Length: 205
Image 1 (spheres, rainbow, N blue to C red):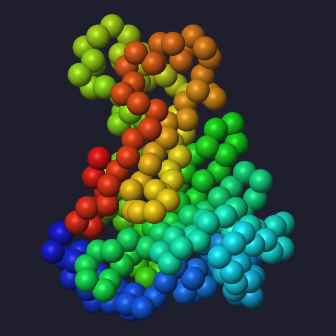
Image 2 (image 1 turned 180 degrees about the horizontal axis):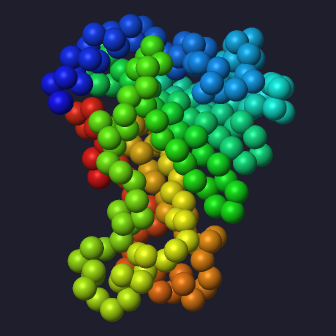
Image 3 (image 1 turned 90 degrees about the vertical axis):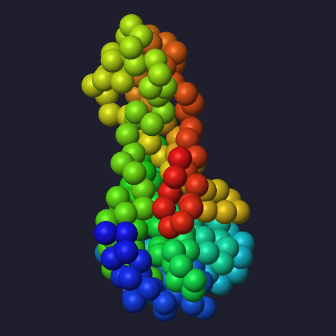
């Protein structure tokens, strides 16, 4: 399966040579960023500083931009990140992180070729569940099962490292739990954040 994936990328992603994040953003399909015209995309990329442009759903603002990374604010509660990730010499894929912050921030991560063909997430990233933040060595302790099985949804937000390809995940449980529930959980947590490193075309913890 891994060999098939590499052959697939080498055949469809070589067009990434010479491309930067601006080129990919401008070619991004409208269904991935509804209501943003090609003209507005171009305006957002005009300079390296913060840029704001109006669009059908309100206002869109550029927050960060480099040759391989772009972060934009799409609403009061939402952001979108685009990151180019190398998979082989002169070839890359695109990772998109869409985050919505309501009661707590929650992210959805997806991957595409540079021609915007969808790729299954499990090729590059393990399933993200709350268990990655818990210390499994304590699973036999009293109340561990209670701590990891509370019925609340546990939102996880994702953010790229400012200068690299590391992916930092944050466990945003506090906003949805009572003080008593938080006290039950804390003894079993390794950390509120976990970093995955991009190595050999896959994210590893």
